[in-house]
Image (tube, rainbow, N blue to C red; front, side):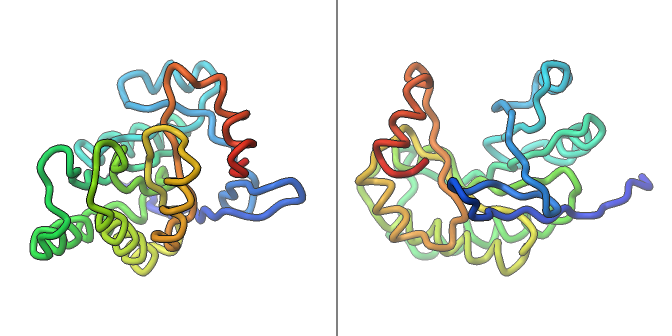
Length: 197
C-alpha cells in the first residue's frame, strides 16, 4: 500500500555495566507488553514494544505497530512436547523448520520488527532435550535469512541450571527471554543471583 519497508537493524551490545539492545545504533530499552489487543493504550502509557506468540495476523499487527511507532517481537509458533510434538521425529522437525522459513522470509523486512521469538515456554513440562537442537537450528536459519533482527526464545521462569544448559545448546540465540507472572518483582534479584543481569 505504498508503505516504505525499510528494515531496522537490531543487535545486542556489551556496555560498561552489562548489555543493551541497540536499534539502528542507538540503545533501545523495551517498555512493552504481551499481546496485541491494547496497542493504543500501551503507546499512550509510554510503551514502545509488544510481543506475539505466533505469526497469526502478523500483517495487520506489524502494520498497526508501525503506525503507532511500536516494535514487535514476532512469535514463531514452535510446537511443544507438552502438546504432543515429538522432537525425535526428524521429518516433523524439518517440516516445522521449513514452515518457519516462509514466515521469516515474509516478515524479515518489516520496519516494525524488533526480534523473533522462537516458541513459547518450550521448557515447560518437557523431557526431550532435542527441542534445543531444533531451536538452535531455527535460530541459525533466521540469522542466515535475516541478519538484522535479534533471535530469542521465551522460557517459563528463571532456572539457572536450565538457562546454562540452553546457553550451551543454543549459541545461535542472541538473548533468552523469561516469563514470570506472580514473581515479577523478584526478577532483578533472581537475575543478579543467577549472573544473568
